[in-house]
Length: 62
Image 1 (cartoon, one colour):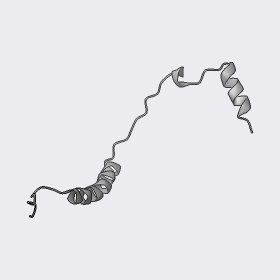
Image 2 (cartoon, rainbow, N blue to C red):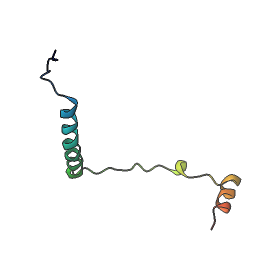
Image 3 (cartoon, rainbow, N blue to C red):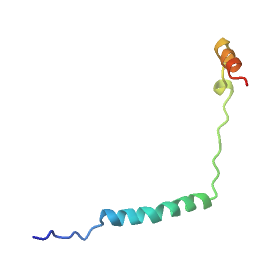
Image 4 (cartoon, rainbow, N blue to C red):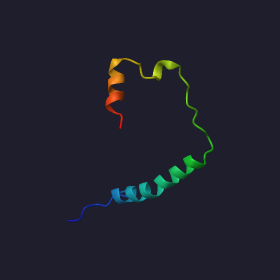
């Protein structure tokens, strides 16, 4: 008894397509020419100066 063959894509076809389309997507993203802009925030992202951070910095010295 043989199994009927689907005309749709198989897993092997999917892997072939994925292997060739991934580098093409990376190349297209690299050549797109758009630049990412970093949002500048105030002092909220800085580490607070307290006893814990000073103790860490003292222990991390070489």
